[in-house]
Image (tube, rainbow, N blue to C red; front, side, top):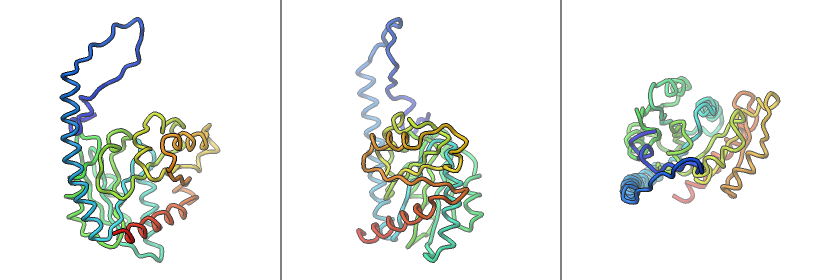
Length: 253
C-alpha cells in the first residue's frame, strides 16, 4: 500500500497449493525488513508518547477513528460534532482529517463550525504520530475533544500509536460480519466498536450478532455500540461514552 510503513515490502503469506512450487524464503531479507519496521515503530512510539503528554497537559481527549473506506466515518463525525455542539457540555472540539488526497472531508467538518486540519498522506495509507504532532500544534485546542479521522484502512493504522486515548473502530452493516477475523489487529487495538448504518438492516442480509461475536473473539474487552447517524439511533450512547472517556482521562491526567 505505501512505502511509509514498509507494508509494501513486508512478508506476504500465500495459501499453499500442492500444484505450485514453494516460494523461496530468504531469511536475510526477512530480518532486514523486521529491523526497518522496528526502527520506524520505535520512532513513532517516541513521538506518540510526546503527543500523549501534550494532550494531557491541554486536558484534551484524543480519539482515533478508524475503519475501512466507505464505513461512514465522516458522516458519523459530522453528526457527532453537531450533537455535541448543541448539548449543554459546550466542549472545545477539533478534528484532524487523514486522507491520501483532497480536502473534501475536512471541508465537511469545517461546515459545522468545528476547526479541522486536513492531512494528505499521498501514497501513505495511515496517519503517524509526527503528523498528529504537527497538526495539533496548529489547532490550539484545550479542555475538549480531538477527533482524528484516520485514512480508510483496517491494516496499517492498527500498528501506529498516535498518542490517542482510544482507537474507535467503525464497522458498518454494509460490510461483512467476518471483518474482525480478517483484520484482527485493528479490532484488538480498539477500545470501542461502533456498528454503524443500522438503519439499513431491514434491507440487508446481515447478522449483527455474528459481527459482535467475531469482534469479541478477537478482543473480549471490546465495547460495542450500535448506531445510525441518519436516524439518531444509538447516538446518545456514543455521546455518553465520549463524556465518560473524557472524565476518565481528566481524572488520570
